[in-house]
Image (cartoon, rainbow, N blue to C red; front, side, top):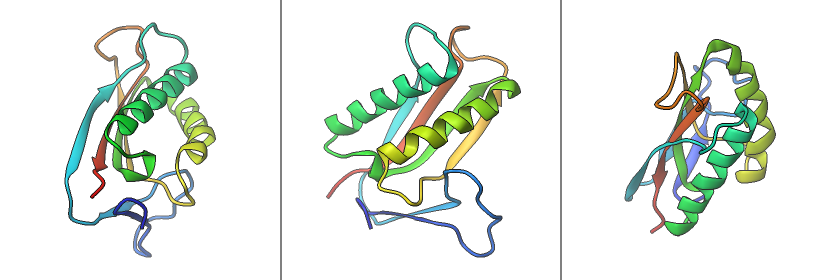
Length: 131
């Protein structure tokens, strides 16, 4: 159990085809809720995703932990046309951030736009703090 979080895919859940899990079991402890993070300055979705994950990684380090403490992500992506790009980028990047082979649950929400028209993606996280 890394950092008090265990990722699971119960037999009753539908088959997983991408890098997320249906369940995160969390050992009792303090939680931190990271506000939605965006990438400053625009760019394409891939560049924004990588910038956001770098920023989240920096915040996790400031909190004394790492990505393996993430309980859940919620991701907001602008436009249905960007969903496949998001999945491809996530699948390429997450293995370098997590111990794997399982990854935290992620709720994906497709939206018309975010707070700034240049933002294509916003990611928030719930984190189990270390003991």
